[in-house]
Length: 242
Image 1: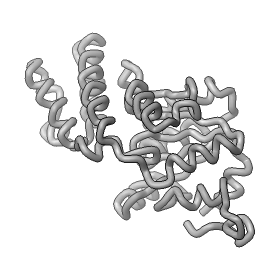
Image 2 (image 1 turned 180 degrees about the vertical axis):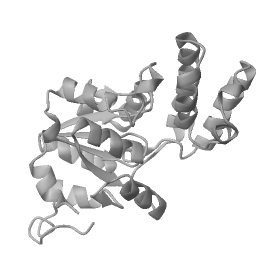
Image 3 (image 1 turned 180 degrees about the horizontal axis):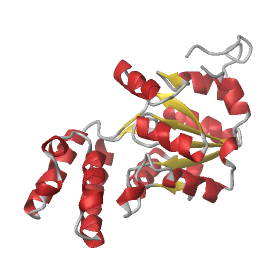
Image 4 (image 1 turned 120 degrees about the vertical axis):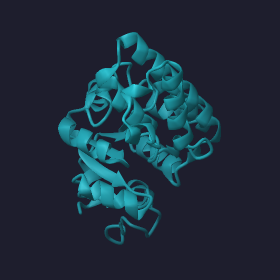
């Protein structure tokens, strides 16, 4: 387990996954429902056969996209499917719940002078809407890197991380990513970026460790304590508990 203070002291830019570390996007509009809506859309297009039975029963909308991408009939079809998911994600922002300590951590990192970027499989439009509603859009500026219509480039492909490094001008070895899925961990490793896993439950923790994550936290509070310690807190009392 790496020391968080040492990690942040050597970091110039923090890349956040969106759904999980920043907010629970589907808190009031369940991801399982969205995945089912995508399958229903495919059925209406006569394309449900692009999915296996297990894929058609997935509770992860991005798993549906990944499954369809290799065998989709054409790029226009994929663009329509991606747009369908974006509409559902936009609805979900109305009931999204901020992750505990996320707003404070983002503002503290920005105050400390670190660069910030979003690297996500969600639509950039969705991220922009959420950040604006929370008053966090100025913290990220133009450094929001969501999925493109090339669905082959969803994480674990490092595409969105590489775009973030390019837009911020930060070398991979000076960047740190906070993510909550094995795909985040693998993408960070492929991009050469240090990874800190955020696991809100034991299942997430096990998945992240299984994917090779060596530093995992169950709350964003230890990172906040390092970046903006309270008087007499973590900075004067050793490393925070992880």
